[in-house]
Amino acid sequence: MGINNLLVVNNSVQVVEVNPITKTLVKNITYGFSAHEGSVQRLPNGNLFVASQSRTAAEITDAGTKVRTITLPGTVARAYMYGPGYPGLMNYTN
Image (cartoon, rainbow, N blue to C red; front, side):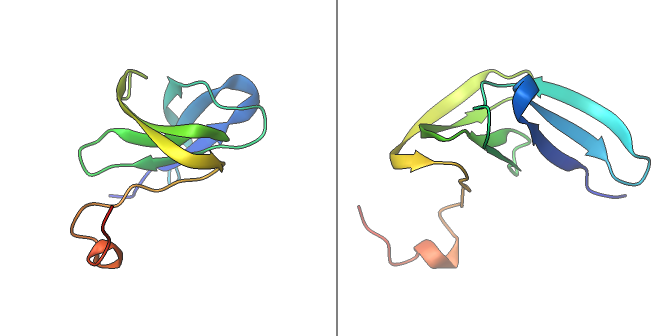
């Protein structure tokens, strides 16, 4: 079983999930991406973590419903979510 590819389609403001083996569309997920940049990451719980050249990133469901929003310190075009057990965060404090 392969892993599907997630792609940001900026001019149609959506995430497209494609099966790379069959080259078929699995689903479209609408989200307000900017016209030029954005990123998407599938989380272990099945939701998506999205960033869109703004000061916020969000966790959304496959239906596009926001689960939570994270305010970032500046404008970003790409962001990744790491779990609390990620080794790079072990000595991090707020």
